[in-house]
Length: 463
Image 1 (cartoon, one colour):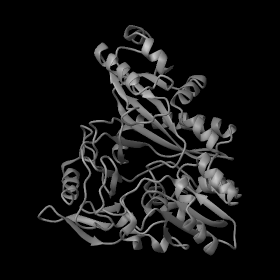
Image 2 (cartoon, helix red, strand yellow):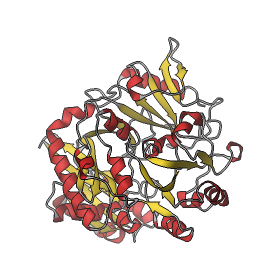
Image 3 (tube, one colour):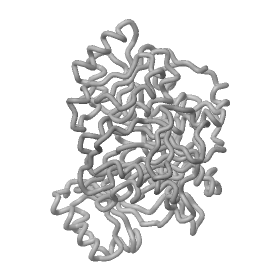
Image 4 (cartoon, one colour):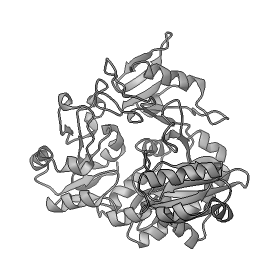
């Protein structure tokens, strides 16, 4: 059993305790903090030696927004850490380090696990990443970075000449929302609408990236920059903008899950993708980056090439399932190397050799969001656990937990993504994650009927 013992480690998450299930097994002292108590926490409690702690009680809540650094600044948080972690160094684990989190950790003499926030911020920029791809002569989509003011002055014809007749306008950091939503342009009228939106929302000083629109398959691959070279993960098929689990009326590019079985259909570009990920990983290591990152690609089937789109310098939505699948493939997970690199632990090169990127399993997961236009609530709690669909098309609870290899084709593992279904849940907020032991996307890249039925059964519990 691989173990890391830097001190007492506390993971902080605004989502379910399930997210850090993979990391928990590597630390002798590991606890987790969430905003509120989660339904059926006993699904995870045995994995966390320092327990699952909540900032607020369930009764306080209305699914209030709170950033991780705001959670970290709470007196209750510091009091628990002082009590259970006072005899050893304190390490804070988050999905993505920020300057605010780092400042709080420094004030309290805690150690933040993860790369420097300055490097993360740089890699988060789509424009920086695209310039990096050009510099390294890696396959990428034609694009240009432009200010809001310049975008208001440039002509539709000029963009056609430089980029193409169909193009996409995005915030250069990839922010999405009513003011910074992704805009797909194929006519001069649509371009004029985008200019009006920028003017209306006073985004003249913002930066945008304009990219050629390429219709293709969304793929991705994880990497991990280490002192012994960059490791790569196996191919991932991304489920994007599924109307069965998300509201795509006012947002595009909504992440809805992965299908690792479906990914096998695109093995032809896996080696080339791995080469790109390794090249990027080796370079960002020289900048001081250590640990996990993900690269999103678009597979251009017409030219049989995978083009890199953006870098996600953090834990991605693949976790913790990706780590659990790696273990089933008898590989040391990328996550382990992320953790040892960012806690300054030494490890043998033999462990690097024990990592491989071969996957023989067809697992999938779906992120179920509020796909409706208004807030929704449920009249009952839906505990995490193993389910099936009964003869009346209702969710049937089987048991609270099981290993992935125990799931059968007609069962699935449901994980709560909100602490309280009885409180209003806003549109497109995460509600649950469902894990399937099968491929769930058909040849038309849509969810198979069996899975659509499961989603409908789940949503029938809300009003």
